[in-house]
Length: 336
Image 1 (spheres, rainbow, N blue to C red):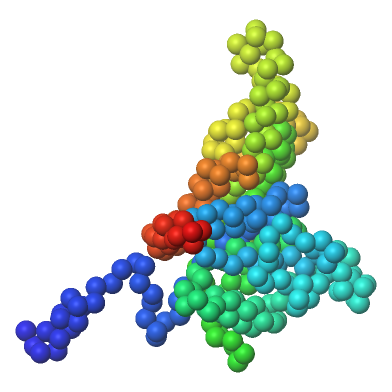
Image 2 (tube, rainbow, N blue to C red):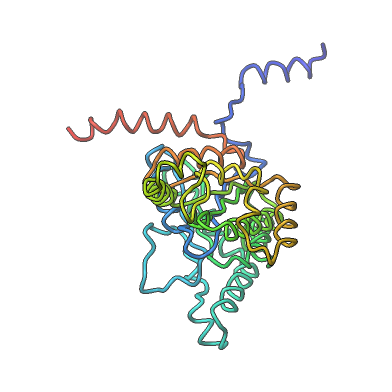
């Protein structure tokens, strides 16, 4: 064995690496992003607030970023935004200045953010370092509620790529992103809406080009309504396999998204060929599955967080648990 090889072996033996060890100074520390997307009314902002609370309970230091420029300045989201895109550009101001409609203003704001992505890079880099010496590795991003931004436009999908590029004003970030797509579970009450939502979810997955977690939100409302409808059925009808009007099947059917051909008899016969084509497309790709979630159910949120962590490769969970345990031990002492 040469002296150089022996030196390498002794160095590796003296300093074993751990998944929780920070990366070397030659490479940027990874930043894990959870981009929360979905149509209006799907509960994105409420989900971000609940996920932020869950991360705090788990000992995971994180940032919350609002990238929805259409939020009214007089309104405040149910979370404290560490970075707010409205400090850079606001949809209301754009609408007044350029005489644009709501959709046009949102598109303009996202494109403006892309052109000034160093503004976001600088703030994320500054906030993640902080003053405690314990860098933040996780970011929850509340995205706008315009479906076209994810299924058709390039702005949202380009954002993560731009963050990974260095500029004259800001260094590049090693971003590991996951897209969490929220769909209101009330769409399950109508077979056509469910297929349309699944199709939009598939388009978003293909356009965003990120690891993806689809979520059926507000499942507590769906399950309560389904139980109420089932209770209203006659016992004989229930034995014959009939279900309540509205929700055709229990929640498991919609989360697994299997055997979608079962929905065809419940769709408008006028569009039978189109319906068969949509079902065949979803079945052929076989990518759309949903995680049920409710902000009132911590276990369901934790399941979504674990799925998002697996998708983006988050590797600091053990460190978070140790921090949580240390904080729990220190809490009684601080109260004395």
